[in-house]
Length: 248
Image 1 (cartoon, one colour):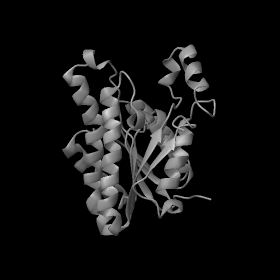
Image 2 (tube, rainbow, N blue to C red):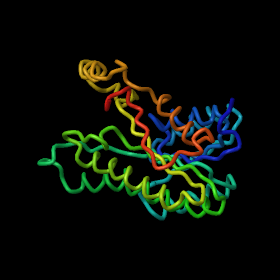
Image 3 (cartoon, rainbow, N blue to C red):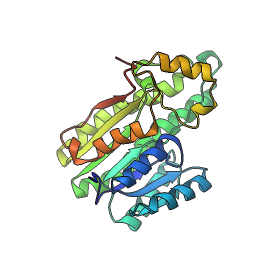
Image 4 (spheres, helix red, strand yellow):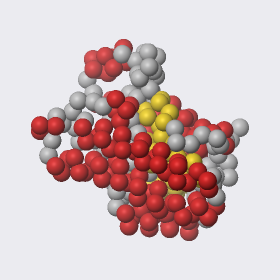
């Protein structure tokens, strides 16, 4: 059963990692896809061709979600190419980890700009279209770190906690127009980024998780499909923890 057939989605930061996993599973569920990348043009081109074989319309866009005008232009381009936007997944994000005493102002500002302001930019950009349609699902990617904090990640934790408060407020503002706003808070998800970590550290992480494994991008993608589809039609303003029980 294809849960997203007939729907058009924008996914930011989808050329690799979790975003790539979301894009693939969305396409498998029949969604037409507009996805963004910042620098990975080759990876985006490969993904576009790969997902196009699944029979849905797929197009990649090089765009900086942290830039307000670029977000506005992206949505205008997607509307021209696809005609509507039913789902927005705000997935783009970066880390610049350091202890607070060593963290420079630029590293704090950049993480807030890319991780949090991009969510404002993109939500603002799709709002008018979704209001006209009187429907829409906005899914914002937070993190277990945004809920419980993490030493060495004050900037990242602040950005991800901010996403939760922003999303709850959007849910209250737009609920009467049948526009839903929810959050996914991933735990330890194994991607090409975690492949570079010391195997002993990864083993320690896994040992501390009740399900005794790291999550996959598909685990996050499946949760996104649920929140994007009609299965979650009466769910808004919520944070779904996809963390193997880390916060239990």
